[in-house]
Amino acid sequence: MGSVSAEISTTAKKWRDHPPSSYSLKVDNFKQLEKFASSSDDKYQSRLFSSGGYNWKLIVYPKGNKTDNGKGFISMYVEIDSKSLISAPQREVFAELIFFVYNKKENKYFTVQDVEALQENSDLLREKIVGMSSE
Image (tube, rainbow, N blue to C red; front, side):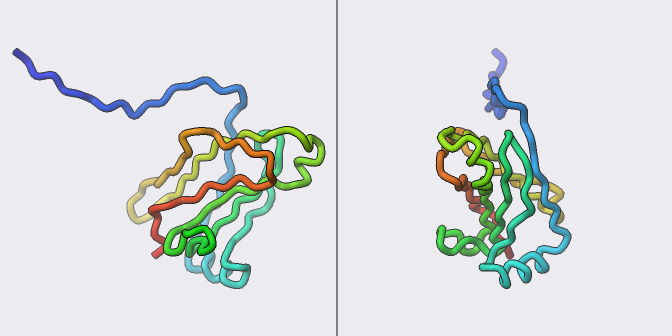
């Protein structure tokens, strides 16, 4: 009698209404980003980028957002530009966020994704990366 091996599927399949979009921030020198952030409330804010009909910015705390229990980790958030909401003030915003952090030494990406899409009608959608040491 042959043996049966159990495989764990890592494939998720689903349909979605909206096309994907992405934003990339390349950091060539992490120490330089830390230095810049230390002079700006310990955070870096990207330029505005467009996704899903809204304008957003990426906010990175290279040493972690201490007020959100992220000390010692890289904390990353997206913030919707409140001017984007003026044209549709009562609409809810749905966002599926996946953060990819490239580790040059390992030649791999660390990814974090919420299982469910974020649904907000406030002006801040947040997702924190945990488990990525900034050292």
